[in-house]
Image 1 (cartoon, rainbow, N blue to C red):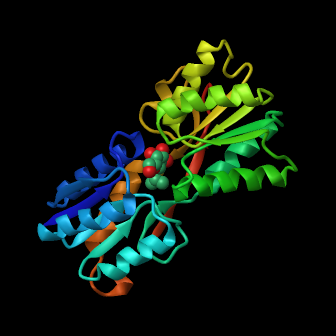
Image 2: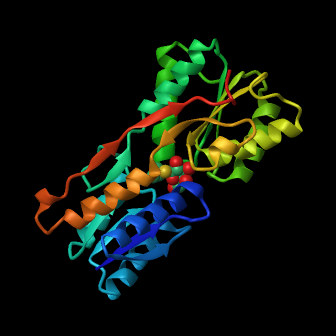
Length: 269
Ligand code: IPT
């Protein structure tokens, strides 16, 4: 009657939205949710958090922490007394997961910008330690390449608005010749919009900006953000359903890959 959730920082909008959904759907199924939040030193404190949950008799744990395949497999291997379901791993890896297709939304955003006439792209990716950030970046690059294009600049932020703010200032200093900017998530895009406004660069007049996530706030940015929409509520719902259905029998554990789609608003032209 108790589910565990180990999550990355809830100061980030997407994981906090997912946690809210997990709590809501679990409660509806008459389960409580014990939440452990970890920030840094992921590999070490993840096992500690799982141990804490185990000591509270939790035997099903949803893990929303970015994990490389080898780390996720090791967690499964070393915790066979519980069922782990992962939300932030490579969707095609073998562990039990509910995740998003990392390529459909990224392809759609490059295609859309290309068809709007853009040829000079800058990329502001998420942190290199995050598997999702790397998969999004790879898909942007592959799609650009399919149009025989390469980005004018590529940098990494750390998902928060501050890093988007300083990231775009760095991009403008290093090579300001881009008309389209792809950003790894909406929080960084928020910082980008603020910095561009302060620099007198118009959006979408001079630079079109595309975010990623479509958290609840993104439609209220100024200008409202064109972004890749993830149904984070659905991810929470599917995760709860699938982990509650799962039993010791491996066949009860079926992973799923959820779609991502481009939502066009006012930050692009
Ligand atoms: C991913 C978000 O897209 C990103 O904005 C950031 O919040 C990150 O999580 C935190 O780890 S969504 C994840 C399920 C891939």
